[in-house]
Length: 93
Image (tube, rainbow, N blue to C red; front, side, top):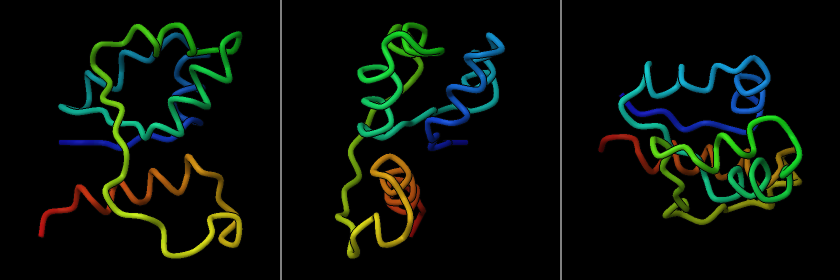
């Protein structure tokens, strides 16, 4: 089973040193580029940044489809919107 993960569960699992639960529970762990940027690049001193940057089990992907509405109008940040778009892209036809 595949999973597309947002920043909050990554940070939460990192805080309790349990990031390894994701690859244990899912065959593929996918995070959007915006989530990677938020957790690893912008959050260099925060929980999960180093562990996630070294995780060989995570796939960083860009959504294939573009949003049809401005994310802020939906109350979403870029990472949240990319999670939804990637999840939609990965749905079987």
